[in-house]
Image (cartoon, rainbow, N blue to C red; front, side):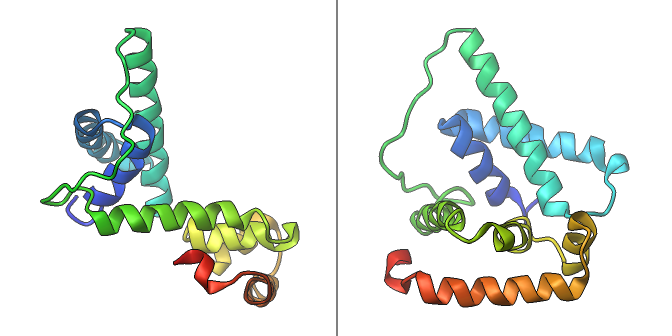
Amino acid sequence: MEKYQTYIFQIVYSILRHQKDAEDATQEVFIRIFHALPQYKNQGFKTWMSRIAVNKAIDMKRKTQRSKEDLVEIDKVEHITHGNVTEMESIQRERVLLVKTRINEIPENYRNVVFAYYIQEKSYREIANEQGIEIKSVESKLYRAKKWIRKNWKEEEFQ
């Protein structure tokens, strides 16, 4: 729990945009993860947890909207302490969103491999199995994607 608490909180918070609701949802996500562990199939633990977190946050948001409660939108980054979102974590989250957006610029034949490897944190073997290609092809696509990124992206755009 300690290892993934901030990560899960950030996912839930990005959907709910309300600190107290996100804290409650984070606790409920860990309860769901615990109960769902027997169904876990040893493929991308962090991705699996993220999916549970996103689904829980969406469920909570729908419930809130049905009860006609106003959702609080936060425009400024709050300085929160003790394991919650800090300024650096917020900046990091913004960078991740920028990178995810920019990934769409990568040629399609490389994009899926880049997304699976760097965002979903899948292994070469998992990617190869899912896409029906050889592991060497995954390596080659990642190499070519990195080469394309170096050529087309400027480092200062991400600072």
